[in-house]
Length: 449
Ligand SMILES: Cc1cc2nc3c(=O)[nH]c(=O)nc-3n(C[C@H](O)[C@H](O)[C@H](O)COP(=O)(O)OP(=O)(O)OC[C@H]3O[C@@H](n4cnc5c(N)ncnc54)[C@H](O)[C@@H]3O)c2cc1C
Image (cartoon, rainbow, N blue to C red; front, side, top):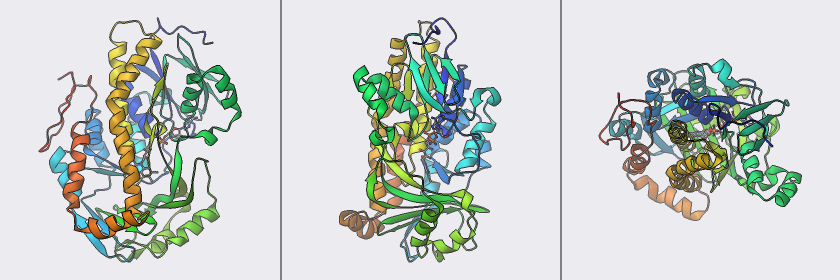
């Protein structure tokens, strides 16, 4: 049992996971003047790892609200156009989607080397030295009517009012929620099982992603996507670096976590050596210049959790809504969820009412209601896009190979983005005007300057 009483104390939020969703949420908590700590298992939050990330205008607007937009622009890889290639380098479609996005919504799509985005969030988080605990791996969560106790693998404990789980696809917080939500008899059995045996996240695809040095001839500002039998590649070149990913179906879907070896990485890369990832540039040329510490071979899980909270624990980001990187919407949704969740916490903690498990659950329910259907749609769409682009079966081949090149993809993409972008949430308690495009924002902060 938890012995501390937090009902009469100042609320304290424990964020598990210092990835990009955890860090954005930390900024929002800081602006809401809510006490918090972020627990991150890695020894360094900002290590230059990972690949690229494209953030859409509603997230650019959230960054602008925090005063980070102009700083973000300094870190971005400009994207103006998108083109679709065949594996022999033939361009079948090119459009100026990115430019139209800015005209529609007032902000561009921001391409980042992912670690630079994380560094931006980290560097500008007020009191970051005390707010972020690194080498802090969460192992379990205790919950009572008074608060939560988060146990770390080093034996230490963090106490607080509630937990936000932003600890990614193999979430320990999710395991804890499952245990708390189950009857005691089932909990004992569950403890004996390896959590990965029961993971709701299934990998049907895997891929290599990372950052490579710029290779001569690669056209900058164009997002290149090669579609072909069984695989898809996404490459974008900046001034001196390129962000990339290549993905293919696994022989068999799996829920098991797998760490690939160097040999598996090299062998997988060799499979795709002849694929042209920019017109006239084969993957082999890029691979030969890649520093192996900036590339990864990993499974790309997919999955969706139907309930995002239990008691005093709530989850967001990849821990509840996971898709392959191909659709490029998961981080966008996770960050927006961070804003909506903190809006609810701000209202709850400033309501003057007693903070009880019931009032916390009501706030979590409102948060979930505001996001879950959109997130579900995005996750489903991500599955279809992954299979369509990689010609996963004849019907997807037929559509992507024969039909898509004749469609007005610029218009289709812009139309698809209009609703999720224009209706996206913003921090209600931070006065802000920001930019607008042809399509007005549906939501404005409740508090105006
Ligand atoms: C190659 C690639 C490209 C992508 N491109 C895009 C894109 O263009 N647009 C988009 O919207 N999305 C994109 N995504 C998806 C996006 O990166 C994820 O949705 C996003 O990173 C999820 O953030 P998160 O904070 O929820 O999880 P994560 O980024 O996985 O962060 C979780 C954090 O929790 C920490 N952690 C885990 N377990 C524990 C524990 N027990 N205790 C303490 N800390 C723990 C981890 O170390 C990590 O720092 C891409 C993904 C990949 C792989």
